[in-house]
Length: 498
Image (cartoon, rainbow, N blue to C red; front, side):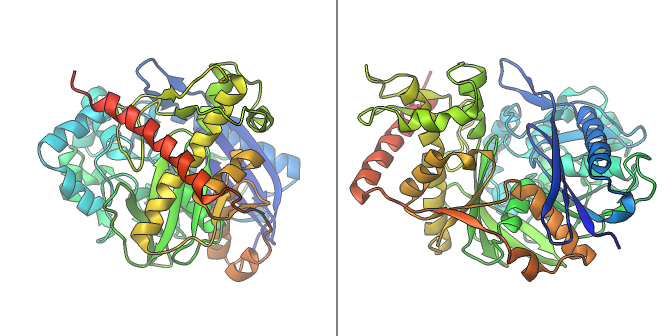
């Protein structure tokens, strides 16, 4: 058996491939961005064919640069951007339209129509998710309505509809496997999270035939084998598939109820393991599958934030206030302590716990002391406030008090942001010494399934850097009150009668 695991993380900004050794340590990482198709309407797309070609290129380079042969790799694990949805022709293996990215709210009208028909409560009851264009179902329904030939292909049984993991598995196996895992399925808004199968009822409301959806498999199940389109001299089994946030939860070691993590990426996912039974939220959180391992499902409460790392990118790429994300820490620390500005990054609506897809962003509280440093700090602080909105609800609704929040992703390098998060959530924040927790979690699932790793051993070796809260209770309460006043301004403007 091979002594390495290949981890693939197909994320919003690009694709990463990592090689892990027999101890679970990273040998090498390579990544490549893909084009972001964004227009004035806020529609966001990716080219799935570009992503597939990038993946093959990265795998070839990784094996060449590490002098690794296919026979050295025991298994492959895949983590992926979750709600991003696409469709392709099974006969040709070609996508019929760009992938519609999770950030894209173009399905809002479809959701409005279903809400007006009184379907919202039933959809949430079955799927654990509030009716929203954030999830895959409305995106797939949009493809059926607006992409020429989509409905004809579905009627002929030739249409495949899924999330990015099912696309990659399909391409990697040469079309032999059309599968997804329980975690990804639970984020489509088409999956019955208690019966653990596609809901014919809910899919029908969106105009989707479940025959066009992939087979749902355990996260550590058999996803076939791949030689990456003939790139390798032997095929490697695919033994781990999870949505990126679920993979990060596993990689963080949050394997028992009450443990929670936050993944800081383009957006953020805050997720708490709640165990073998689903916990239903009454205040805007969603219920999903954490994973299904060895036939045993576990559930999570989750809140999603649309813009965290992407808000920092906005400072750099659009406002030109910074040249790199690394500058933000020093700028935030140098900001005027009496500045009272707040920033609400609702570029394409607000996610949990507000679920207002029509919301737009806002800078508020600006005074003459507000300048570049203060605006940068407000953007970083907005990330901490959004995390707190979700963490507070999770503790209330689950009955679990957080011992700590385990965090991962690029922005966790920012010491100011990590300390601010600890201060605002009033709990310890722990940053692991490994950055790519999504790829690692999927790789560990695959390695355990393949028999290369033993779970207890591979998780016993991680090291973490901790940030403890330092703010007084009164100062924390005042800061949060200001944030919530800013949120009320955004919601009031959005919901004001025209």
